[in-house]
Length: 78
Image (cartoon, rainbow, N blue to C red; front, side, top):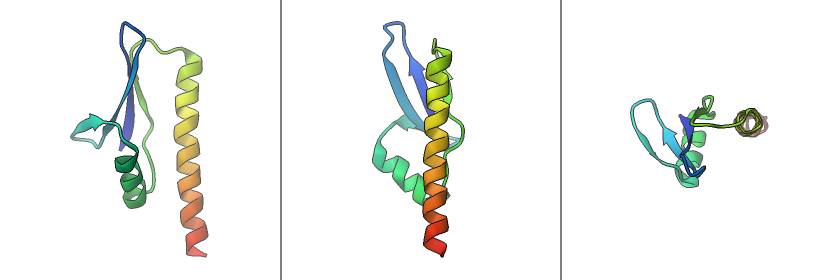
């Protein structure tokens, strides 16, 4: 699953969850359910005019989420 960030002409940002076949509006519960099952997010996709700083921030967030989830499962296995 990956997050898709879109920015429209009014500079409003929306986020969707994409599971390879379907996209739907982002919500935390669905993301957490996915992380419990799959244990990671794929790299995010950005659509629209995002600055390099915004793109780097999104990438950093996904990396941090994946790191925390991986750490949780490593600690759980011990």
